[in-house]
Image (cartoon, rainbow, N blue to C red; front, side):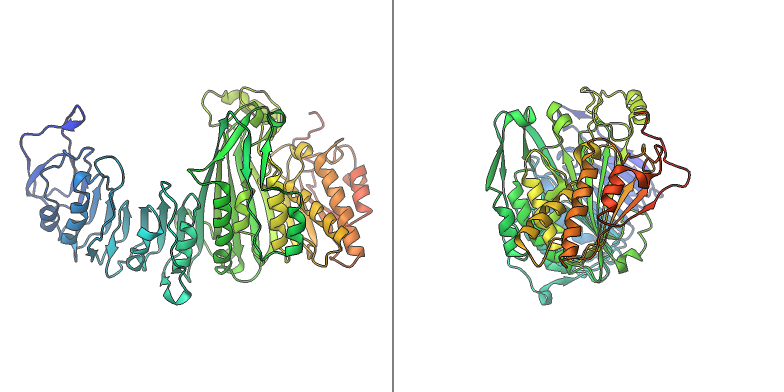
Length: 590
């Protein structure tokens, strides 16, 4: 492989002559300067200029035409001033054996190139392609992987027909501007992607994702990944929230009842959280995202068949400022399917929420200023029969300056979800994906979204040590809704078919105590047992059964003899699936 680089001086490249190459067996070439190739057998070419002047004399059309018969892989890191010329010159590769194309285009001022009508490319053997500008293919090549970065759906729409044979498609919508309003397409006018198995979308969750799902059909889709990042920052003024209204498809009486205690705007005082954070997401407020997520729900629903499982999984590190929450919908056909060879795609429809919070004392004491519950409206579909709320906590913060050894000792002694362990490293752990944040708005969203789930039969919730202090938002929301519904004598209570609740204690951390004085989560379990028993006696729901699974502490005596268990067992049946050799990493010493 031959790599030629010119020396840069004062942000530009000075070359007075061509570099001449006479190498008949040369197959791999990477350059950022002008060259004159006399003889070669080029299979791989990378134009890696970091300056528009670096390849100022290169005639793209002539270069591509000369190597059209041998070139298998082409990578252009920066087309510079000739962005448009470069794309047009790609026509010279038509009909050739090119299998891999990577193209990055920038305008002279550093922005993306302006989109203008591009010529159609005929690359019959193209297997992998990535581009930051519009590329049109005709006929559609047999793409195994396509990565495209576009401003909005208006640009991507012109490319869809040429991507119809793609197996794995990754779309990144730029965050610079909202998507334009485009007419909705009927099923008859959608572009069919018969081979598409994997679809990944990175977006600010404006309407671009909804428009994309409305524009294509993919009968063979195995995995859909949508990524949303929510950021918070410190502010000097009060924190304001903008409310969104629940969709009309839920029970209108129930939604109206819940809205009575909700206002259009809520301000959090400095006294409640110590300091202030505002929620920002690249110019989109939470109302816009809420609307997009509500519109996303029917598109996800039409991709699923039969009973569906919803998994809400939180991944977080002790002392880290962020957390990752994945909402996954999976039906029976996808649960029987495998992953791709690289294991990069799990079967199901996934919404990944990344929360990045400005860290301070109030974050440690109160948690994040926003909850991942804002993504819930996209996944609360009527076909859900099972909900799993899982928590994965890792040791070792990513934040700079933290003492990793100290964190490791705390992991061993305090358990993975230690609540108060020092200000400097902020070892508060966000353990509840849908939990309350600094505003009651999150709990109201959760309560409203539960109204869309009448067919849930099973709820499985991970219980960790910090739940003794903070409780569990899902249990809290069910209790609040059911109590209101009993008072109103509603004929359609929340989760009206729920039969089993599993509380699962992880075997990885320290054991969870049931008889802990003042434990908030066990008080919520008792309240839930009471309200569901009243509903069962009134004929509004089936009898609820509680199942305790995993690493619960039973070292003080038989677990079924604890005060909490006896009180709950008087209301609903309880069963146990506990380790035969006792609890792991007992918490009686902490």
